[in-house]
Picture 1 (cartoon, rainbow over the protein chains, first blue to last red):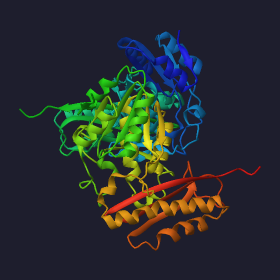
Picture 2: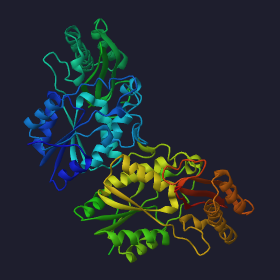
Picture 3: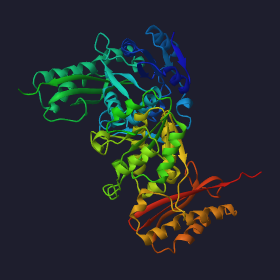
Picture 4: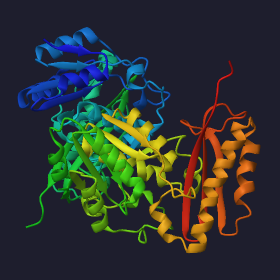
Length: 284
Length: 284
């Protein structure tokens, strides 16, 4: 039986003394992507827990904070089905009793700057701050994040390492629809026509991977291969399509090593992101 | 017997499972002010620990990082005498394996801005970052800080609260020489003449307290009362003398409530800080 905690103190007390804790921080409106994280946390740990909190710090002033989809009953049913022991579901006032923005901010330079950081300048500070707080609340644990938010995963990994949180950050593969569309809570915003067009984002990324795998080492040409797929899709408004070093998110020219291809595009109201990996073997 | 740990992992392992941990983070070169913190940690906790680490993040480019006094043998003898169980004494490489500045930075707005924040713009970000890391390393504990660094104490309190660290931040009274000079590792820089003059900083602050206690509610006049004491001292070069709200460090006009009077002055090579409290009773 999943126990729901409205307060940090109650959630923290419930975790004390566990041999191992698997923790899935979420903003709710859970889908099968989250379910894969919950299952991974459940499989590898003594106690499996999640948080459901739509974090205002990570939304910009013109973004969809108020409209962000919520369905607590369905979320808790999924946690129950995944045999999650405890869920932290705090109010904004419980998390930020002094209001927002908070005086304390955690930033991660460099990794936060490109791509999502350019489009959403305060986003990753909001993410790093709430995740640092959630790590301080949960204590030693394994924390599960989806690879769909690759840049977020890189920011969280570095923040946890730099601040020595006793947390093992575990990245889990993106869960996709049959046509390649990455599962996202924001997919609910899509009209049927936009939904059909949205798979072009993943197709573009896979075209970039194919270019790398066929020997292309010029990042501009890999980007062009991605654009060639999606630029003609009338429903798609591309924000960026990039190929960078997988861990530092730095641009490389020529391309080398372990790469990540990342993209963001708007389909109507929904701003969607996705990414794929490609590795260039070291010369022998 | 005090056990010294060069690695975060070893120190963390030594603390695991303690019923209560008292933690004294220091930059070493310990004096009787630190001793009072060690004694407080020892008296109130199952396990008493300290860290000795001269944190490069909190020194500005023109400050005294390289010259900062160090005496590990004497520090460990004091820890031994105070019956401290464990000391973390990491290298800079152990604390910051990716180099400095770190990508991750913890900032505390508003409280960090005036006074020391004006004179040392990156100082409190360096403090908040290393203390957050030390709190993540130590886990649940009581952490002891001297009131001598009042603004630092306010920054650390707010950082710990905002990020929900399971840490009770305990402020301990400033330990002073007979003439009022606050103990500081930097007092070692003082020549005999400067040492004699240095008590003027505390005398100035106490003159400000006396002004408040005699009914003065105009902050400019309280500042003037402080300056009247120290401005004529030839060895003293005043940086600031302020009277602010004790917790938020905001200026108030007229003065009201729980106040802190804070000052900084150079005496030769030594930049010294000090503070005193004053409370204006609420009208009845």
